[in-house]
Image 1 (tube, one colour):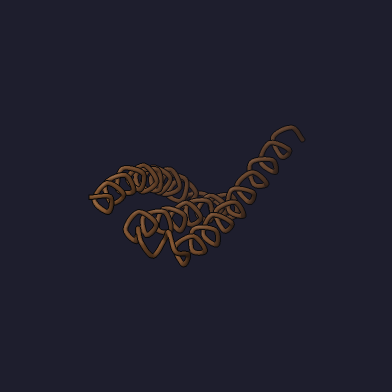
Image 2: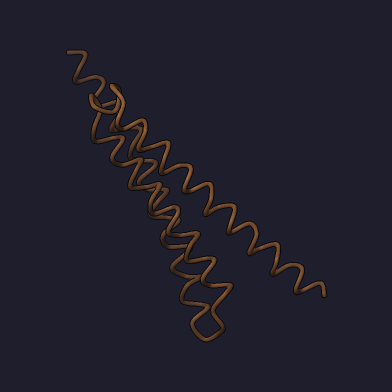
Length: 106
C-alpha cells in the first residue's frame, strides 16, 4: 500500500510538471509574439525551446511510470538528461537577453 501510494504521488507530480511545462510553452510563445519578443528574438527562442524540452522531459517521466521494466530505466535516464538540457537553454537565455539589450542600446 505504501509503495503504491508513493508511485501514485510521483506520477501525479510528473503530471503537474507536464502541465507546468505546457503553461511555460504558451506563455513563452505569447511573450515571443509581443513587441519585446520581436526585438529580442534569440533569447525568447531559447525560452520557447527550453520550455518544449522541459515539457517533453516530464512526458518521458510519465511514460516511465506507465511502461513496465526493462524499458523504464531508459525513460528515467532520458527524463533527467532532457531536464539538464532544458536548464541549459533557460540559463543561456538570460545572458543572450543582456547581450542583445546592450547591443540595442548602442
